[in-house]
Length: 598
Image (cartoon, rainbow, N blue to C red):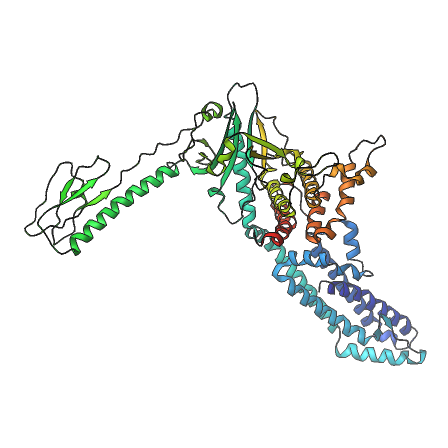
């Protein structure tokens, strides 16, 4: 119903034109001077309401219509069809939120008022009915009577509706900042925390490759599509550290530096639980078990740090907790009976506090494949990154091979082996991971703005027939070249364009640079220029909708054209919202067709 505004917009000039037509017919009449003033005032008042409505519409459109030509087209009374665009309706709904229905209701009332005026003026199908010269006196008397009974009734209604529309827009604009703060979706806060953790982890690793090895050390970060509902502080990041002939898969957990590591905390809780259980059982037996013998009971420990103690409890009260931990064999005797109770205590394991990792290269060779924390790197705000052996990827400790995403995409000169050929489902899973990776890592040094399919690697043990395509890595060499500003507008555009190219290649399982289509866009000497990939991608993109539907086609188009309503910047929350809605969500919907739900 957004087009109702266009109907109202076109109704004003039609009525004013009809009134001017009546004026020309009335002017020769003898009685005209008695009615001229009211008639002219009516036209002026109607023109004022037309101007106010135009201004209200411009205010409505201003936040999302950035093109002057588009704004002019929408405010052109001769072009009401421009308001029939479904995208315009979505933008207005997003702009007004729950007030959208109120806006539609006001426009409908204005349209009804203008339609009533058209009926009184004899306007049909946009034209004034033909009036014979002999009937102008009659028309003058008819309008004078109508004006005397309901003088300016229609103008007053239009004034009221314009006031309501103005109030609606004013209130909406006043509430917009607070709505934006509240509307910040879990995805935005989640992604920002993930970006922060990735940035700090990179800096921590960079500062701890301190050796003088001649070759740079490699660090690979596993690319994953995290779930927005998760607590970012409880997520694990997975690394593959490589250096000095050693490869270590590491699970990085986020911990609080004000407490001991999780294993120590868990052990302490277990010990406390044992003591509480001991008290509960002894107390229960002392109270409920029928007396059988005057013989005392022994409390035996497995650790040896506690001595066996004979314990007898008075029937009249609960035993004191101190009685269980006497250092010498003492017996508290009672006059009647004792309850034999034998409880085996487990030894309390001592868990060492993890040490700070100072030099990854020298310490990595000492790390053993245990479940204990290997050490930690300090992070921001009293937190730290705890390094654990990654049991899930222990197969990567052995001799491994690597393959890049470029190797897995068929080309003219080479194609992957049958064992390395990706199915369509695998390609869509990878597309989802890469789209989320851009959101997580582009604002950090992990991912440069010039990233491409050669940067995405798959590491697999040589004993395996093929790489696991569900675990792609992004690799960095340390010491690394300081990256440029990853949050700049230009860097963001480059990254989006490269993602669009990768999505095209994964969709069609083919490399862009090997397309015959690309030959059309080469330079004069047959070499690619700055426009070759862009023109090839836009031409190739035309086949996406027929292949995979409108959702994927629109997601790829936005990446290639960098077409987002907000400023393209990874620090801009409005842009993150749009990227999530228009790129991540269509990819997720597409994958659901293959595997149910994500």
